[in-house]
Amino acid sequence: MTYLLIALGLLQLADIVTTLKLLEKGGRELNPFLRWLFEQIGTVPALIAVKSVFMIAVYAARDIPQVEYLMWLLIAFYLFIFWNNMKVIRSA
Image: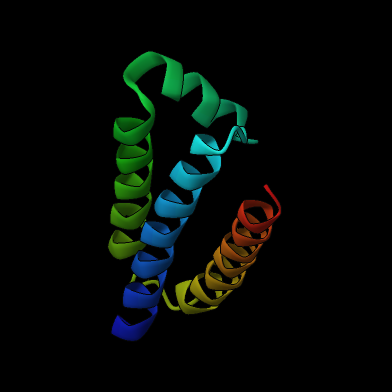
């Protein structure tokens, strides 16, 4: 379970870095809640806050038997997000 938490945490960091790079290159955040939060508290604080709350929630749920399956799905989802961000960065 620890390796899943580490992988998910690293993917959250990768998402922050690639999102910031995308925004620097003129891209936009597709998540409407995050766009709103960017306007309220700033881009970096919003990303850190959302990712921190997400990781705390996943960590708190770590002892639920089915959460391991959910973590694998989240890892796959964030791998796709990272891959897509990198693809967009390269084409910009």
